[in-house]
Image (cartoon, rainbow, N blue to C red; front, side, top):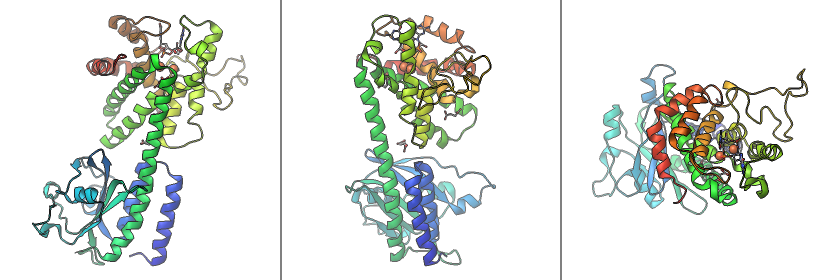
Length: 411
Ligand code: C2E
Ligand code: SIN
Ligand code: SIN
Ligand code: SIN
Ligand code: FE
Ligand code: FE
């Protein structure tokens, strides 16, 4: 059991972490771990509200974890619950009030909610006491819930949660709420940024960015499944990559209309100016450090790099746009970035972007038909594009075509 001093230190440390760590997953896992330590609870979960349902997002369970081999991860499926009074989590989300149940197997049958035994039956776990606390935004909206399961005494016998436990958990809930609310504001700002870029260049970009985002996550998922990444990791990266890919050309907002909207082909100087859109986009994400910011920076910077090293901008100082290593090189030829040195997300978006640019009409070109486009993609494997990703692209053609149909330019 923790001393009062240790408890205060733990809460203070979580508050510090809250202001430094921008990765929501890491924060939520730590909040859950510390909350359980405070009340010696065997298990716990955090659910997040999406629209009118609750999604089971984070979970920890010491008893189930002990049954696994060392280093093995607890596998659980993410499931969703409707926000209504029939389940315990749903009830707390619907009413916005905490609920402290001493034994979920003897809940008064006249109450609207009842314990759902499926999880226990599937996992051979026995749930007894559950403390469920709403996670609320500053304006009172419920953003999610924190649920702590099976409080234990010093001998690890399951006991009910006390009123004091309930008060303690309110502190953790408020830290988790701040983290969640901040993540949602970040997401809203990213969506605003995408809209703003679209307003700048409405003719080319609206459906284009949706398609590029859609193609990119399909390619990524196949790549990740080949490597046996976990479902949780894949879903998280899909989410980040979709938005980062949608912002691949955000740097074009800083390119003048004379160039951006030129009806014909560029001359050399005009193209040099346009090339700056990669660095200008990357600059927007430079001083931040969340996983999203890092991914968006890499995508903006490297989506015009080529597998054979002949892409742009190459290694540059993002803040000054000057080439890195160029003048140190004996022949004065800037060092090229190629193959796996190009971040995966940049290599993926390169294919998605070119495929879409060729398939659709641009202010400077007509749309090509599909067989012409596919033959370019195929021919460029190992030259413009990562050959493994080209192979994945062709194995996903049906899905690629369905994404094209979903986002058409005249919606
Ligand atoms: P974008 O229109 O989204 O095109 C993205 C990429 O698709 C291009 O990158 C290029 O790799 C490929 N692509 C597009 N059209 C063609 C084509 O007709 N033939 C071939 N072989 N590839 C094509 P790139 O060239 O680095 O251009 C970056 C962005 O610069 C383009 O994005 C577009 O906004 C602009 N841009 C490029 N060339 C011209 C041009 O001649 N006139 C105008 N007005 N804009 C251009
Ligand atoms: C999000 O993915 O919703 C936000 C990402 C972040 O917190 O940077
Ligand atoms: C957008 O237009 O929505 C994103 C940025 C761009 O492609 O210009
Ligand atoms: C990424 O975050 O861009 C993917 C990892 C890599 O750099 O290959
Ligand atoms: Fe671009
Ligand atoms: Fe593009």
